[in-house]
Every structure is written in C-alpha cells, then in structure tokens.
Amino acid sequence: MHLPSLNVLTQVVVIGLLTGGVYALMAAGLTLIFGVMRVINIAHGAFLVLSAYIAYWLFNSFGLDPFLSVIVSVPLLFVIGYVFQSQLLAKLRNEPGLVVLLTFSIALTLEGVMGVIWQSTGRSIRTWYTSQVWPVTLGDITLRLPVVRVVGFFAAIIALVLLYLLISRSDLGRAIRATVQNKDAAQLVGVNVARVQAVTFGIGLATVAGGGAIFSLIWTFNAGSHEEWISKMLAVIVLGGMGSLPGAFVAALLMGMAESTAAVMMSSYISPIVFYLILFLTLIFRPQGLMGTIIRKG
Image (cartoon, rainbow, N blue to C red; front, side, top):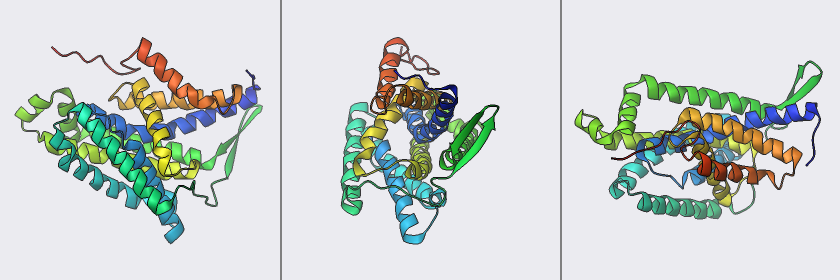
C-alpha cells in the first residue's frame, strides 16, 4: 500500500467527492423507482448509456453541447419510462421476479440496438473544456479541479434538490409518498396509483438522462458498459438504503471517495473492487443501508 502526500490525498478526496456527486445523480432515479414500486430496474444502466449516446450523437451531428443535450434526452426518457411502466411493467402486477427478467431483457435489447447503431467502439465526448482545470489554493495546498466534474457535481446537486422539492412540496410528491407508505390506502383515498407509478418511472429515467449527459463527458462508454454501471448504482442505493434519496447521495459521496482513494493508495485495477467490498459488508452488517429502514410485514 502506497501512502500519498497530504497534497495528493486532499486532491484525491476532493475528486472522489465530485465524482460521487455524479454517481448520486445517476443512482437517484433507480432508488426513487424502488422506493415507489419496490422493484429493481436492471435496465437503468442501459438507459444511462443510451442517454450518453444521445448526447454523443447530438454533439457530433449538430454541435450541441452535452449539457444542453438534456433538453432532448430528459423528455425523451421520461416518455419512454412512462410508456414502459404503464404498458409493460404494470401488466406484471409488480411481481419482482418477472420485473427483473423483463428489465434485464430490455437492457440486453438496448445493448443490441446501441451496438448495431454505434458499434462496440468506446465513445466519449471531447469539448474545449473537457481537459480544463480550475486551480484552487487552500493554504499550502493547491488543488486542480476538473471543470467537467465540478460543473457535473453542482448540476447533480441542483437536480437532486429539485427532485427532493418535487417529492416533498408538490401534490404529485404527496401522492408518491402516500404510494410509498401504503399503496392500498393511497388508492382508497383517491390516488391513481397506476399513474403515480408510471410518472415516477418516467422521472427516474429522466433523472438518469441528466446523469448520462455528464457521464458522456467523463467516462468512455460502449453498448456493453451498462453492466458495470448498473452494478455500481445498485451498490450505491444498497449502501444508502433502498428507496432513500438522501441515503443515495451520502452513499455516492462515500463510494466516490473510497474508489478514488483506493486507486492512489493501492491500484487503479483494485479500486473498482472497493464498490463491491463495501456492498458485501453492508449486506452483512447493515442490510437496510445507512438511511434505510427495515421493512416488516405483518
């Protein structure tokens, strides 16, 4: 194990926090969907990669900045999510096993379609600001912060705050919370549970579309990348607590710091294992996650 200097360690921790913010945006939709419907959307990673490809296509074909690609990808994935839930998932009556199989098949289908359109070559978006850094001096320490990750972090904060306000302050949010607490009781007081679930699924995919735009600027991706990223997002929401948005945010920051620190102190080949080691320990010692609750059924 290599112990870095304080300067390097501080830099690595800050980069990990910035990266964790992007992880939180990518995983927020997944934890929201689970919170309302108690199902795992295995296709979430494939929709992340699809939104990254949309940003890539818009940038190369029309010169549209990846951050502006959300004006196309967010509404598009919302509609896809709404239709997918209302026309396919709803017919399964939320049977967990069947839902997992269906979303897994959707992920494989999307992988095949994306592979046909864009082939298996790794893609990424390179803009004029992709390699830019902002120097920040803190006493004797000078940090070099990548512009993309800083902007991505604050974009993630804004998106998560808006999502939180939607859930906590709006009529739709009250209907979502009622559905989370007790679906049958919510239906008895007039909540259209089927519509709430469809809208929530749409919001979940719209959120990952925002994450995909930032994702396309930071990481290289191809049609098969969704397998790695759905694993990371599942690790984040399990650590944070299934269905907890604040928990997902905190967990994503911790995961980002742990991954970046491990890359410096050990090896870049070992650092990805940190995600799954933390997931393994969480499932053993605190299966409800950091901010989750133990679900009891009478």
